Length: 562
Image (cartoon, rainbow, N blue to C red; front, side, top):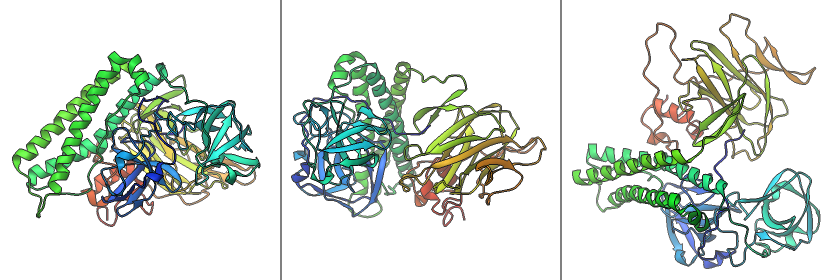
């Protein structure tokens, strides 16, 4: 099981034609805010593939989004999208850039698509070293056109300037695939044309039920992301301004963009999708209004950034209206989106704005799992009883190259309410517990390599085991046995156990109930933006590992958690 960003369906939007190699437009931009996220697609909440600090200059800008909120940039050889809000344009005219959106427009545009049906083959012969997806453009943001199997032969017809993506002719389809997954058998890759050749026609558009449901889920996910990353943050800013009479100007929250549903899909489901699209865009416009007003206050000349009562009340009214609109949209979408089903021996986890079907494991049993270059997180469910004492362990095999391991345990029906979380270095025995379960319910264990994507190729086998340790039996630990080359149970330890960072431990019988754990205000915040150690611990548990640079389980230890 892997937690992955939602992939948008292949929807064609009848917009202006996109032109490959549009860097000739000469547009350059510099980051003027604290930092800027480079995203996989032009949408708030799309997967972040990198972050650059203020002063970073984008020298190659090749396209813009249809709503003029995003720019397509070259990010160290890969295609990415950056929002215009933190940028200042140095040269060129943004409006002169072609419209290009990997979710709806094929690479090269509809006039000369570099993906689609083809009768041509290429001069370079290659074979796939793994299963690989053939996409409509050189980036993971483009929809999948076909799947190439391990060791399947293909011909190459083009490449990107960085040689990180190949244009591939495969069974009558022209598309793009990562160069990482191919071995060259004959021919010169460097002689292939940059940006490839033109297909016989654009890729087929999707107008079926799968694309309709995917669009509904996209609307829901973008609302949830805008709530967390933008609405909650700007509400906190305006609330602080109302209390203090001044705007505490810092890093501005992302300005969410509108959504433009592809015309074929919109036309086929107009009565349902058009009202949703309209109300969605109105809500996002209101949210941008609240953010822009705060930015305007912060940019006024003078010092102190004073704010009047009428201004703060008006801004908070807009924020509250936006939340009402978000809740209404969620309710309508919930009635339209079918529930994901989990079969026998499985559980359905809704985590990090995604859903995954996980296996249900039994206590006391050793399970083997593996991380690969494509799968760097996994999860399991188990059934627990109130006051049951549980210990969870994980141990990588000696030949694993995992740099670090992270584990968290929480109730399945409230996966962000962590009752235990810890992290260990690669090769160490990770041990979390003993933890007293607060109630009888199903629990979820999330296990991940937190160094991805900093470690480009995390991989390796490991063993996991959850056990009831309240039975009075001798404690057993996972250990690698050299004789059998397997992981076994032993009273010995194969390596030092990591220090444990238990979040919000459950009090024992008769103990005074502690205050509920603090809520992370935003996983994008750094230590300087948080107020308490409890908030820092909650944000670390929610996945913001930047707060714990030395990976010792203690976030912000130089400031908040001394």
